[in-house]
Image (cartoon, rainbow, N blue to C red; front, side, top):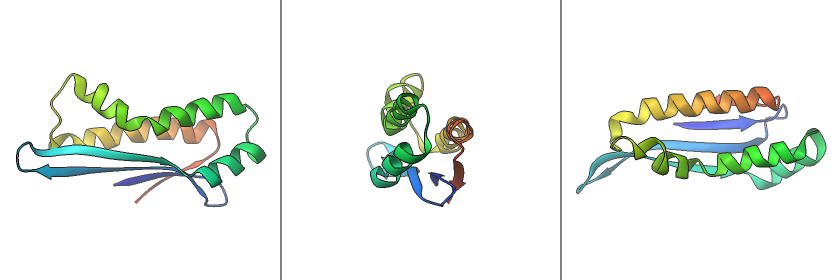
Length: 109
């Protein structure tokens, strides 16, 4: 599953990919990769955003979602592939809030 934050020109500012990875020793576990698309993000920041500091802080937090997954979400529970739907659901809630705050579009693929 890939979730995107895009502007009104359909330029991707951020994407997060979530998948269940299989490992012979551990079994299935959830992993994610978060990417800020720096060119689109920067152009949007320069041309469209009024509260630039808040926007920067928000996207810094988004870039650290892998840390959230391992250091917070799975700190209290075992990481196994069955948790992927819950992880995606929590990411959707967080990204919906960001999209609403900054007039972006949340797209899933």
